Image (cartoon, rainbow, N blue to C red; front, side):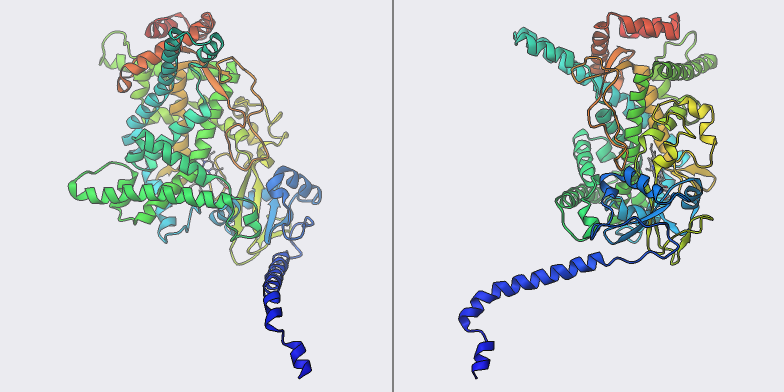
Amino acid sequence: MALLAALVPSSQSWRVSLPATFLLLVLSLLLSYVCHLSRRPAFPPNSPPLLKPLPVVGSPAFFTARNDLFRRGRSVSPRTGNFSFYVGRLRIVGLSGRASRRAYFDSKALDLARGYERLFADGPSLEGGGSPEFGSLFNRNVKTLLLRENFVRNLGVLSRDVREGLGKFVAAAVVDGKKEEEEEEEEEEEKKRKQKKKAAGVLNPYEDVYRLVYQLTMRTLGCEEIAEDRKLGDETLRLYEDAEEGTSPARFVVPWLPTPAWWRRVKSGARLYGILDGIVKERRRSKEGGARKEDALQVLLDQGASTLGVIEFIMGSLFSGQLNTSINAAALLVYLAQNREWMDKIRSEVDGVVDRHRAQREGEGESGGESDESALDVLKRLPLEAWENDFPLVDVALKETIRIELVGSSYRMNDSGRDMEIGHTGEVVPNGAFSVYQMDDAHMDPDVYPEPLRWDPGRFLRGEDKKQPDAFLGWGAGRHPCRNNFLSATIVGMRFAKLETFLITAHFISMFDFQLSDKNGNLNPDPPVLKDRTRFTAHKPSVPVYFRPTAAWMPAIPELGGESAKAAAAAARAARSDGGRKKRCRRDALGKTKAAKYTSITKY
Ligand code: HEM
């Protein structure tokens, strides 16, 4: 009896021991979960050499210093350069070198969508997303929407968007300018006034071009409601940016952990979903009323897509294209501002195309005599063939930009049910494991691209990229290029991204001459390093960079009303503060007649 009394605690001791027991329970659960996390699936013996993992986390350098991780990996694997490592419990094979690159991009066993879905910060899957129809819907419809007829139908509107968008940037500068004058009258402090005066007229390409690409993408692969509404566009872009932000590395170790970054993504994604859902519902309602629109959303609805399918399609298109296209389109202009030789070459190419098409029209006798069509008017009616074939220098300039800007990795998962052999190396990517290829492995190889960090589009004219197979991966390679063959047409991302970038570059160059500056308009030809090679995607520079227009050739844009004329005047004012130096440059580069034609537009 005494023994029993000793074993059964009194009601008093229960009160004390309950919380302790609960704590003990939680601790032992935690411990067993940590044990579970530490028990990783093994790599088979014919996997590439394994980097020693830290307990639980594996190789955190995958997040903090990926290039170093790859350097270390290559050093433990002198024969092939391939190596194995863990992130949490995930098994990953890092690949490098020519033979492995080929095997990686050509492999049927490696799945792109699953790789990006898990390793690219919980990003949305391109295939097999939430709704069962998503994969086929995305592929089928991106192809359909980017087919030639659709491009042609949309071209005029896209070009109008670009004209208006760029015109508005300068128009915004005019508003600043007007403020300055008013403030001058109000006799504000001298210092403050000077500061503001300098600020008038600068553009931030990574904001303004980014916004423009968003509008073009929404226009082509989304819906008019957002493409046409500035406020809604700004709001959805902000939500997209939040939703696109990477999640915390902690979720790679504990996949269910609701980190603050994850919550932010979920909240923004839900809000974006809600907005698109409202638009789809309204469109379905107004179907009876006959308010049809000619856009991607309509194509999807006509095909009977579900609301979820439509929304996933639009969000998938944004995730695939927005970041890469906008960063590269903006960066291309930044590189041109830094490289006078290529700026002049590209300017001559754009002017040449404009002249040829202006002359063609004169030849057709439509306008009779010498045409006074402005460059923008000519660009407005340029056919798709011209956009796709007549800008070979812009093409190589974009290629070179992508080579440098495309930092980070490509991801795959081997879900083929068997180990995948890495070419003839004798090594494998195990079944169920991931593999990662660093784009820099090809793009920053000095044997292929001497002085790899130097921006020089001439490399592609000299055939540097032909020294090795797949030495340029900027538009993908092997089984997953950023394009596909569909019926007889070549389609998808690359074609659309090029069209957007060419439209923006040609219009920009036809409207302005510009130099890099700080946000106050002080010229700054060598801003601090623009890209961080440790990042995982193309990205905006951490130190903002601005353009100061130093000359403008901008006729009135009817869609902008009086604003564009004011904008041209503002840019001309900004240019005059350079003492006409740039104006002379322009004359030298293009010859007298043309300069006269352009300058008469802006009435210097
Ligand atoms: C300058 C802009 C762009 C660049 C540099 C770019 C680059 C790439 C690269 C390198 C890949 C291959 C990825 C890999 O193998 O891991 C790829 C694939 C892909 N891109 Fe793009 N892309 C751009 C724009 C776009 C746009 C605008 C879209 C569509 C809206 C798009 C849709 C896709 C799709 C769907 C794939 C996957 C194809 C597949 O699964 O086979 N891209 N892109």
